[in-house]
Image (cartoon, rainbow, N blue to C red; front, side):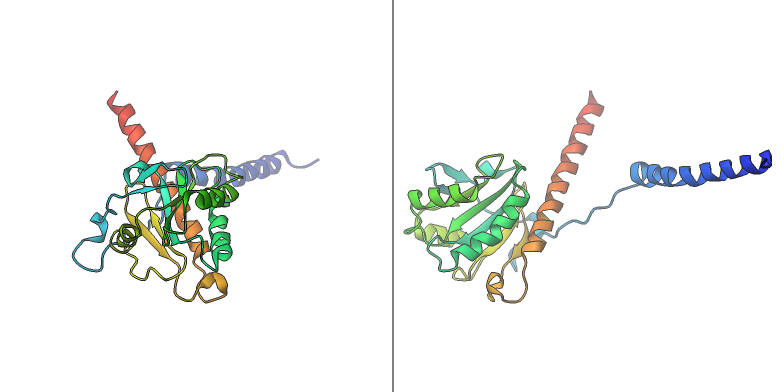
Length: 230
């Protein structure tokens, strides 16, 4: 028959080994301070501090004829995508964005907003069909829009508001946070979606998640502050 003192010793040691990971998780997971990676703020090269730059307001029509503005997107994380529906590489561009859209299809406050670089071609009927094909799996509507308007005004906004100088470049994306700050830039002149160097879409997917976490934490702190005042 085993020595009872030794048996108690082994049981006690096993208990300590079992409890230690739980204590570690409690201390670092609950009581410890979380430090999440944050994205930089992007702005004009000169003249304006990047952290204070917010994209200017705009008013363009979507595929349903609704007027979309900067403030109507407030509270959302959204991708400003600049291309047109007559682009010879439209299928490749769309495929890259579909990766992002499908990943966040169940997230109401994440959207893709296409600023058409050929407003004369991208008429509402064409844009409506395009959006319909790309969003049939979404749980929430209004997550992918194609904006058109007066061609000169659109190009001026893409250049001066979204800070994209080379409008002819294909599939340039900017990541916009819930307050209208530019937090990421993706795409390049080597057409990475056609096999060129530097595929930026995986980074875009991750950065959207970081901004979503940022919004969730901000709302959590605002809710706690409100509860403490009551």
